[in-house]
Image (tube, rainbow, N blue to C red; front, top):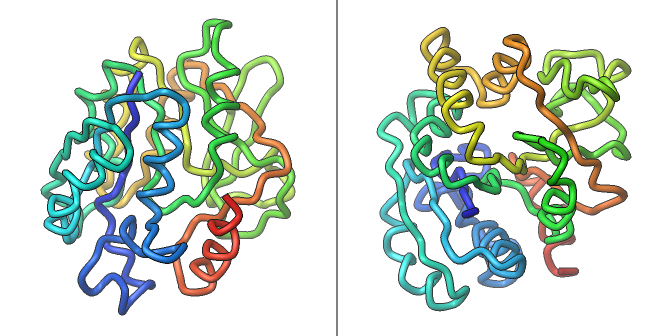
Length: 245
């Protein structure tokens, strides 16, 4: 199993930081970036290889590659997303379809979270699950969150931002364990998704799988401090959280 990070996004709401950097390289604790935190988590759970999907300001990631490898004891492979500034992340994850074959822990490049999330996903393996989403069932939900409806027996039934928060079981936090045997099915679902509409999310690819009868499971992460960093208010929250890790 390897790590996989989606780090191709521009993060325009985080300007001026993202004038010269991709969102994943915005500092959240001194010089420590969102990407640093994710790589540290991967190293702590024993992963040795990580693929990073890059696009917007990718040269900044390439420039830090060797230093990041040395710091975290990881072998990094950078995968170029040629449409990072045009299309949404369903295509971005599809760009990493070859990496999926190894089995991955996928982390969004804008999610600040503790290593307990990865450990929860790993602990949830072993009962035939092929895809396991990290789910926050504690947080009070609003319109912007990626909301999930879960059936106790059938797994994920619905995943979308476009849902009444009152309907949702919880929020998908942007971290997923994907077994290698799910790679072909997921890659096909992602391709169908972005070909239908390039502005769709990879979570819409998960929904495509569910619609096909593929079981997508969840693992509740408990009462954990984490944040998806989209804007400056989120960044302030992320900095308050990151310094506690």
